Length: 279
Image (cartoon, rainbow, N blue to C red; front, side, top):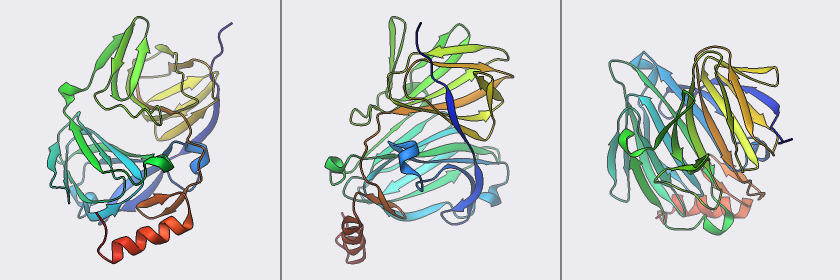
């Protein structure tokens, strides 16, 4: 009998504010890195009120992490000190590796007063934290989509094997074996995904799904056991993100936008930034 994953932990997103007064839901925070390793944070931004977006996310630094921004509706404009100035629209994603340091701004741009999207932080292994920063964006057309028994999905990051078909995003993060998939299920539909990653989590942003008679509703984040297929059934029309990866099992020390492995590295990062030696 094939093993299946069971739902072990459910976390409810909480209201928060970040940047220059942007209202959002904080789904995962970096306060419990072992629970989410190799991921650090997941925020959902969903608003029909442009005033709730405040002044966006003005210029700020990062070191030691990768960020993935995914827009369901609306646009996101990215600018950084490497000279990148790019905008993604509905259905697109932005990926940024901060490495040894980057300073960027992110400005949400509503579409017909509506904006809905996510930002995810992915930890970098210690050996890569001082690597060169990189940036890339993908339009909706660049992202591979699949339909399997009327289940629809988009592979935003990484690679997903379904039967004889492999669906691979142009962005692959081999060190963390990171996978990010957006899944849509109709009412009473089931899905079984053979995932090899040890850490598997989902965030339901519409509807409700069940796993072994335990449910996860919109605004909730579920963490599963570390082996077997991911089996889910929808109780109504539902959409959710799958986040999967191999834990880095390294110490995590965070100070705001900086994530390193020791306190000494954090102090050096702060000194680099304040003294103007930041890349």
